[in-house]
Length: 153
Image 1 (cartoon, rainbow, N blue to C red):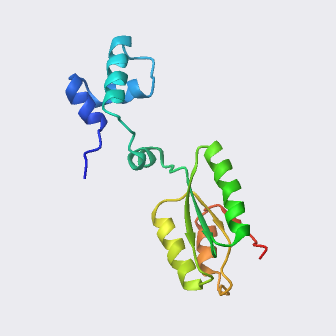
Image 2 (image 1 turned 180 degrees about the vertical axis):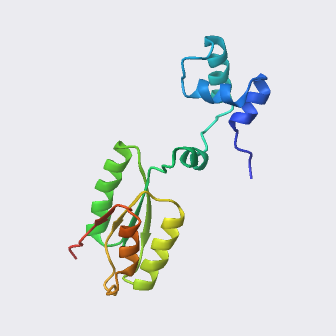
C-alpha cells in the first residue's frame, strides 16, 4: 500500500511545525506568505490529500449520510438516489449506499455497519420484512436524523 502524504511529512521536509503546515493549508492569516506558498507548493507537488477520518475526528463531523434501500435495481430508488447524491454533493456531503434485498436482517446489519462509520444521518426505505422498529427507535433516541423514503414500486 502506498504511503499517503501527511502534514507531518510536509512539516519535516520544510523543517517547520505540523501546526504551521496545518495553518498554511487552512489559509490562516498568521503565516508568512513565503511559508504558506512553500507549504502549498509542496502539498501540490506531493499530491497531499487531507485525511478525512482525522478531520472528522477533530471536527466531530463526517459529512456522510447513510442511505439504505431495498434494491438499487428498482428504477424508483436509482432515480431518487441520483437526486439525493446531487443535493448531498452540493452541500458538501458524501453518501454511503447499501441495499437490503428486502431483508430485515440485512437492514439491521447495514444500519449497524453505517453507524460504526459515523454517518451523520440516515435516509432509509424499510424492507418489506421490517415489522420491528427497535433499531429505528435507537437512532431516534441518539438524536440521529432520519428521513424515511417510501418507494413506489
